[in-house]
Length: 117
Image (cartoon, rainbow, N blue to C red; front, side):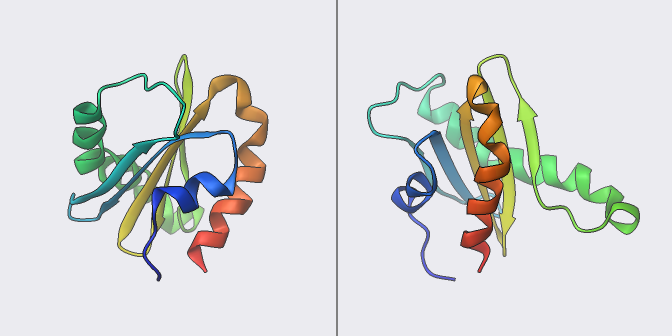
């Protein structure tokens, strides 16, 4: 898989506000806000989340894989944002959109599938 950069993630959809990428070993490759968008959390909190958060979220959800089939995405809805986590080979891509943009989730998931090919 070619190197994934924040710009490529942001180019998937203009409503993506934040993106993070980490290995399945917790090595943070990047955490970045879309240019011009104000962050809701400090960068060190974002990095700390990316070290273990995606692994824990997907790990818990993957316990149902034998019955529900392979896990594709984990979506968490907060008061202000929606967080989407997906696995890209041995890496985790995490991104956020504003809560009021929830209607684009289906479109966004289709676009995220482009990164898996």
